[in-house]
Amino acid sequence: MKFLCDQMLGTLAKWLRLLGFDTFYASSDISDDELLRIAEKEKRILITRDKQLIHRAEKNGLRVTKIETFDLTMQIRKVLQENNVQFNENTILSRCSTCNAVLEKVSKEEVKDLVPERVFQQQDVFWRCPGCGKIYWLGSHYDNM
Image (cartoon, rainbow, N blue to C red; front, side, top):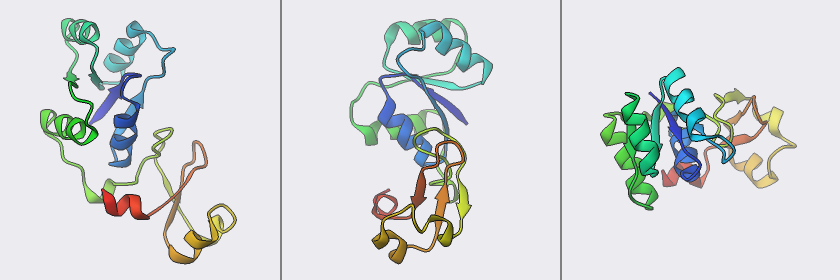
């Protein structure tokens, strides 16, 4: 399942990525026409609050999830329920929350000078984003999911 969040839903896009979903986040310089082209070409479900964009997408036969709340938990719940998908514990932290690339597991030694000393001492498992270089580990953010 692939999603496309418009520029108004950056936090939702980040969390869908953290849950393991391939989620394109549209920056503000991408036009609505381009958003619709991307959604169609890449077979992505458009997620938006924009009523005009929803109307155009539906008119073009695209799948759309309309977001009406500002509550992140409710947004995630709506996306998952409306599209009949569940996140899998094995896919949590499989994508970069920044650039959407698939994370690669790396050895602890590879990140020694790239993470805080406390994190290095407390954690044994790390991932690196091949796209932007960001380092991930199972910290309190994972426990809070």
